[in-house]
Image (cartoon, rainbow, N blue to C red; front, side):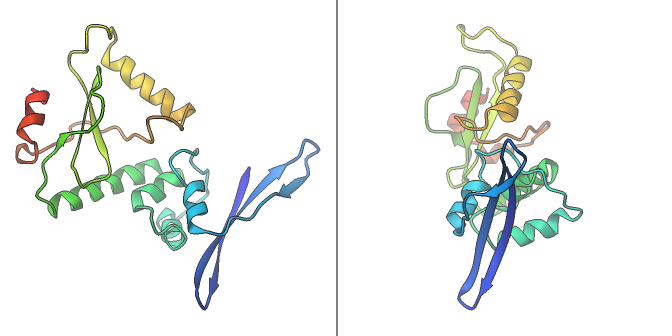
Amino acid sequence: AAWLVGKLITPSGTLPFLLPIHQTDDGELFIDTCLTTTAEASIVFGFARSYFMVYAPLPAALVEWLREILPGKTTAELYMAIGCQKHAKTESYREYLVYLQGCNEQFIEAPGIRGMVMLVFTLPGFDRVFKVIKDKFAPQKEMSAAHVRACYQLVKEHDRVGRMADTQEFENFVLEKRHISPALMALLL
């Protein structure tokens, strides 16, 4: 489906409207619903859906326009939703740096079941997790780091719903030692 996305500006506020445009087997176009809440708009622009293919000569202007109908999304999430992954990665990193400057937290192992090929950690108040491919895998996992990366890429491109919401790969990502808890440091070493 194609989507027509707009906003209605009223004295009491701004409302989104999203119209999914479908095509019949005979080539006729039709609209089967009209979504008018920020909650519905947020789902349409959510991580579980494919990125929109948008022609936007000025992506920043589109992101600012979307911000009014998607107030709960970060700048990085908005860039990701419109298919600007490089902008999204840059904004995601900026959001991380801003958060890190304003907190006294240390990275800890993320809650949940410990993985056999990845070490997953987080800052307790930050809504993202970081994953590092382990140098040595559990004995029952016979694969390479390249195979793990390929599996993540497959999920990112073809199976957007599941355990992995979205990924951004970084190289030479620096974590200051003072931001790493002793328990996590022991796992990293």
